Image 1 (tube, rainbow, N blue to C red):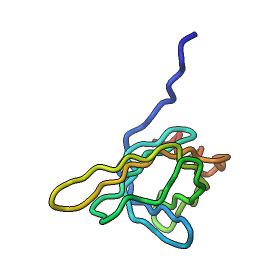
Image 2 (image 1 turned 180 degrees about the vertical axis):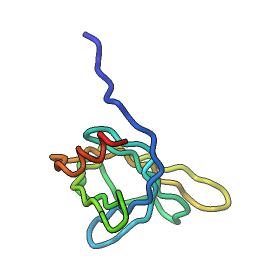
Image 3 (image 1 turned 90 degrees about the vertical axis):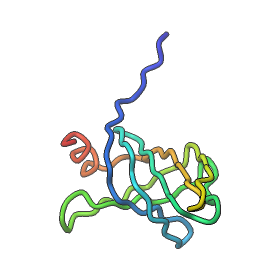
Image 4 (image 1 turned 135 degrees about the vertical axis):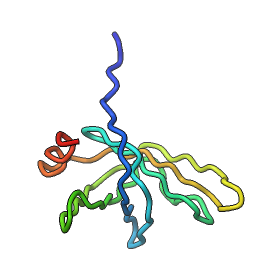
Amino acid sequence: MKKVVPLRIPVYLKADLISDDKSYAGIIGNLSEEGAYVEIENVKTAMPFLPRKKLKLKFQVAPKKTLNLLCEVVWLYTKIIQPHGLTNSVGLEIINPPPKYKYFFKSL
């Protein structure tokens, strides 16, 4: 049986990952119906996100319209970028994507 890969749409959206009352600024690189890929660049340490960790993904979809999505970390990859520091790439699963997100995704 062939594995179905979800449609991923490349985007460039400023976002915040919020975990344990800390906010990490990043960029969403792509979105799917139930997932997101986020990069957090120029940081000094690896992100404290283990797989299955729950956090919020917050980003603006239109002027004065923001989405706050509950997500679970699927994977984390940290890469050293000299001389700037580290880049953390995070794969997220969106938990119960709300109708506002589904509408936004279909509009991409």
